[in-house]
Structures are given as C-alpha cells and as structure tokens.
Length: 192
Image 1 (tube, rainbow, N blue to C red):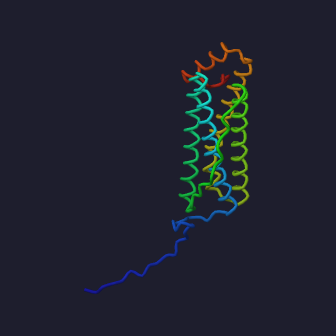
Image 2: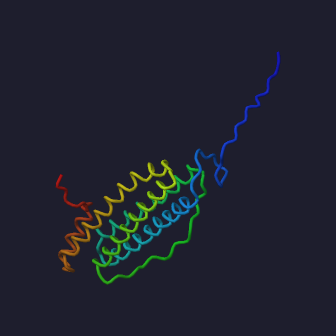
Image 3: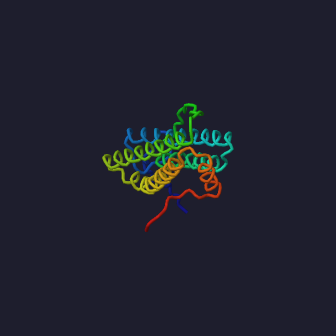
C-alpha cells in the first residue's frame, strides 16, 4: 500500500485578526463602519439617559420607550460588529462621551432624539455611497435593510415629536402620550 501526501495548499486572504476573508475591504470604508458602530453605541447611551430623565419625572411610557430604543441601538451596534467580523476585520470599540442628562422640556428631548436619528440616517447613506464607490456589493447588500429600518425609525421619531409639539407642554396632553407609549402605541398613522 502506498502512502500519498496531500500537498494541496491554497493561500487564503486573511483580515487583521487573522480571520479568513473572501474579499478585502477599502480601509476608509472599514474606518467609517467603525465610526458608525460608535455612533450607534453613543445613541444607545443617549437614549438610556433619556429613559432615566423621564423616569425621574414619573413619565413611565416615555421612559419605557427610550429604554427600548437604547437596547435597539445596542443591537444595531452588535450587527455592525458582526458584519465587520464576518468580513475579516477587527472591531475597535472607541470611547464614547457621557450623554447629556438634563433638558428643559419633553419637546427638547424629542427634538434632540429626532436629530440623532436623522444623523444616523445620514451616516448610513454616507456608508452606502462609500461602499458603492469602492464597488463593495457585500456592504451595500448589508446596508439595504439597515437603511430601510432607519428610515422607519426616523419617521417614528418625527411622529412622536409632532405629537409632543401639539401637546404644547400641557401636562394632561403629555400624560396621554405617555399612556400611549406605556401601551406600545408609537407608530405614525398610515394612509396606505
């Protein structure tokens, strides 16, 4: 019986952590994905601060809503970390600043939260453009459902901001919105 040695060897590209990588990524795109991951973590911290602020003011519906949003932003950060790992990249967790914890009104909180959502949407659009410029179809496919979900989230925040503006700081109106949020009613009206 003869012995044969398998000398088949294939050079597989690896990422910075040594993980196999099917297709290299443009370094500036990787850096921007890392920055977006930090933005998601920062939004999570900000929304947690919002939840605390509302809890301190006996507005449990708003508190519950922002606590859930904080958790959702952590999940989003995890999705970006998973994607970077799947592409053979090393995830770098940057320090995030302590979030703001004092606001003058419910409307101010909602206005700032809406602007944060708009900033996240802009970041995603920039990532998509960068991926297209570097012909990275894997990243554009990854970003498609993320952008769709972000547009829906931005719409929801615009709706809640509009409701708070209509309330015009009237405590009874704010309590009605708070009750709706306690019951999970936070979606804008749909015409279609």
